[in-house]
Length: 304
Image (cartoon, rainbow, N blue to C red; front, side, top):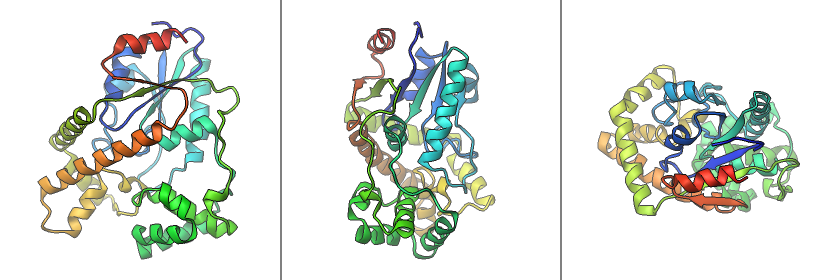
C-alpha cells in the first residue's frame, strides 16, 4: 500500500465494529492515528474505553490518548485544535494522519469547523457544573428542553458535556445554542478519504455482547474500583461514558448484580451504536464498507 500524496484519512464506525483490528491489518506502515474517541482521551480509562493495546500503539503511533484526567472537561474545540496540531506533526514526518474513532461530533466539527457560538467562560462553566451537580443531569436536560428544545432533541440525556455546554451558551449570551450558525462546508484545504465501517445489525449486536464480556474478563470491575479509590464521581466527565456510568447506576440499585450491570452496558452500547450510525450517515462523501472487505478498503486508499 502506498501513502503517496494522500493528505488525510477518516476511519469511523459504531462501537464494536472493528476499527482497531483494521488499523493493525492495513495501517502499520506510513500512518499515525489521531484518536477521535471521547473516552480514550482519559487516563486510567483503559478497559472500559477499549483503548488500544500498548503493543499496537508502539507499532502505529497514536495521538490524543491519555491526555486528560477523568475529572477534567475536554471540549470539541480542544479536540479540533489538538487534532490539527497532531495532523501537522504527522505530515512533517511524511506520514499520513488517520482520524480514527467513534465520537461522531468530533468528526463533524473537525470536518466542518466549529459553530459560531460564544467561547467558554470559566465562571459560567463552573456555575453550570455546580447546577448539574446539585440538580442532576436529567434535570439539566429537561431545563435545556424548555429553553432550547432543538438542541435538547439533538443531545442524548446522558451526554453531560454537550448538555452543560448548551446551558452555558444560553446563560452567557441569552441565545439558544441552536440559533448559532453551524458550518455546512468542509474547512478550507480539507480533503479526506472518508471510510465508514458498518456491519449488519445482528452481527454488530453479537460483537458488542462479546466485547462487553471480554471487558469484564479483562478486569473492568477492578478498573472501576481503582477509579473509585481515586475519588471518582458520576459527574466526572470521564465517568459519564458507557462502561463506567452503569456501575454508578448499579450502586444506586443494590438489586443489580454483576450480570445486570453487564447487560445494561450491552443495551446502552447497542443504542449508542444506532445513534452513531445515524450521525455518521449524515456526513458527506462516506465510503461505507464492511471491515472484512480489505480489498475495497485498499482500493479506496490507493486510488485517492
